[in-house]
Amino acid sequence: MRTRDNGRAQLCEKVLFWSKRLRVEARIIRVQRMTQKWGSCSTTGTITLAEDLIEQEPGFQDFVIAHELLHLRLPTHGRLFRALMSLHLPNWRTFDVARQRPRSGNNSTNPAREAEQMPRSVIRPVTSRAGVTSKA
Ligand SMILES: [Zn+2]
Image (cartoon, rainbow, N blue to C red):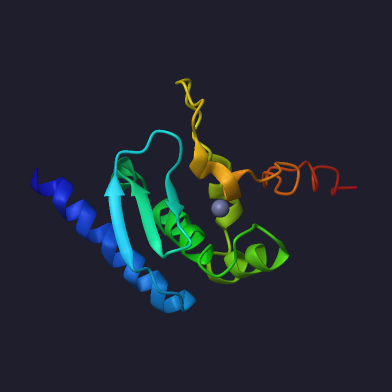
């Protein structure tokens, strides 16, 4: 399908764009069917993106790509990781909620999950109730 190929090409262009911007080097870019995650990265510089990321909104694509590329520099979602995300994608937290895709399938063997096991308490959804009582 032509649109799908265009979508793949666009994703790859985005990866190249973000590689330059984040000053990391993605050696291999793969777009393939993934059921558990939107993307992953290996220590050898391979970035893998979910095929159906093509159908997501561009802002979310940027978020997933920047996130995975940043892992080439920082393996964990520590303070620096989050600071860099905020620097390049100020509204990344709104996407973070959507990143973990709820899937009901069997995921007993899932060796690639390592760094994605982020404690959910660290990153809170932006919808806090702060401000509701700000009107006196
Ligand atoms: Zn991650």
